[in-house]
Length: 236
Image (cartoon, rainbow, N blue to C red; front, side):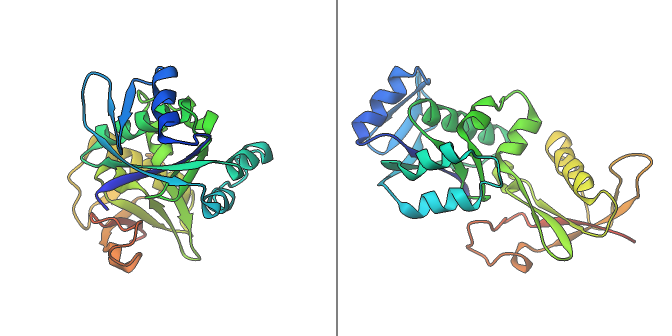
């Protein structure tokens, strides 16, 4: 997937409502037809504009993980329109731009936001509280950790044009180690090769890095498929 796809249900009843909302809320974006662009010029973002979709409400409830209040979920249930924003992926800055697009749509009348390409959803106040100046906030906006019987794995690192990560679940502090490794990838952009080692802290266990093909986790063409594959962290 070469796009970050944001799903934003909102109060708008017409495209005119969306256009006016972006202007009135002083979002820094304008919309025309099926695209929105930063005021003053910049990369266009394609918009897929749809009427009320009951399955969107169901998806937000399924991915709320206790972070949405019942009032927030009820307001999403009553949405009039759904905007899917398709943002290009190039590098970390592309994710920052996608974060700004999300900010604009929420300020203009959006009720919540779900990153379709990683499956993580955020209440409106949470997303609006994310700062583009904090790498950890940008990371939290687009990346989720998924638990299986034997592993923890990330989904969404392709938002930054980076591989995802996977770690054996029985490793001590596995979640902390995985998160630290992923943030290391974003901060340092290291040239990693199969067989290298990694430790989340000096006193923590040293793990071996190996490559896992994305096709072993998701079928090619799946919305969660990462073309840059996975780095696996495991014991020697």
